[in-house]
Amino acid sequence: MTQEVQLVLAALLILQIKHFIADFLLQSPYQFLNKGKYGHPGGFLHAGIHALGTIPAFFVLTPSLRLGAAIVVCEFVVHYHIDWLKESTVKRQQWAFPQAEFWWTFGADQALHQLTYLVIAGVLAWGAGL
Image (cartoon, rainbow, N blue to C red; front, side, top):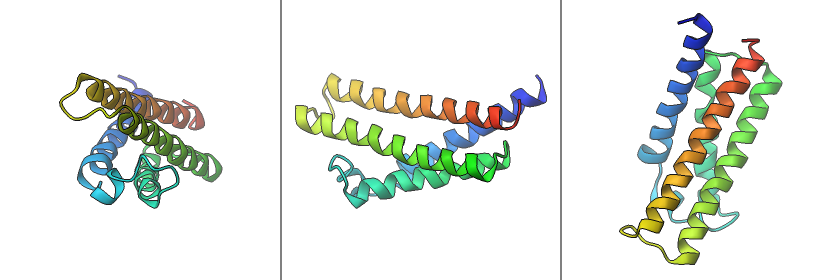
C-alpha cells in the first residue's frame, strides 16, 4: 500500500472516530431534541462540534488555511442540513423508533454523513497533491 493511500485511510479513520464521538458520545438532549427546528442553537451546536472535530484530520493531510477553513464551513453547513432534514422528516411523518421508515431515514442520514467524509478525504488528498 502506498503512503498516499495510507494517509487518505488515516484521515478517514479520524473522521470516523470524530463521527462516533460527536454523534453518540457528545450529543446531548439539547442537541438531538432540537435539530429538527430550523435555526435552533442546538442544531448549530451539534454541527459545530462536527465541523471542529474535522480539524484533527488536517494533521494527516494538511490543507492550506483557506482550504481548511472552507472544509470546516462546508462540513458545518452540510452536517446541519442533513440532520435537519432527517429530524424534520421523522417528525413530520411521525415515524418512531420501532418503525422501518424511522430506520430507513436514520440509515440515509448516516450514509450521507459517510459520503461527506469521503468527499472531505478526497478534497484533502487533492489539496495535498496526492
